[in-house]
Image (cartoon, rainbow, N blue to C red; front, side, top):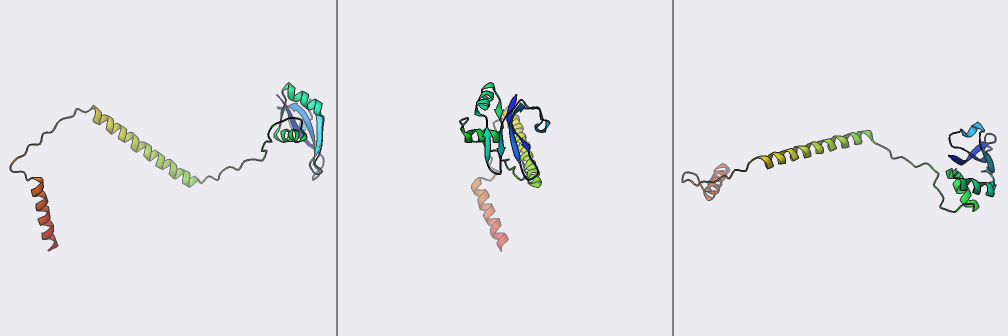
Length: 157
């Protein structure tokens, strides 16, 4: 795949760039390019672009790099939106916090698994109807509450 990209030339603290059409697998510094289609001086913001050749290479399928894409839009050679070429900041990851979150997630998953197994066992077990027989010896609910009230009063004394 062909790329339209920049190649740095010039001395230290005096950058100049060539705009090249090159194979994407070749190194920028290897000087193995298909065609030179322009130059760019970032200090003076001067760009010289061969618009006919750039349009030809884009029509053939050459993909411009991010910076070159923005330069071509600014020069009016292609239409579209500018690309943000700055690197995105990656979030700061707290390893201790992520370890705690993993442990909590594992604990929740284990609890959920156990609850599902318990529900499965209950669903498979036959349901037995328990008939409560009232006997005269067993105290009723009202008697139980009265007895507990009396016990509490005795404890308070």
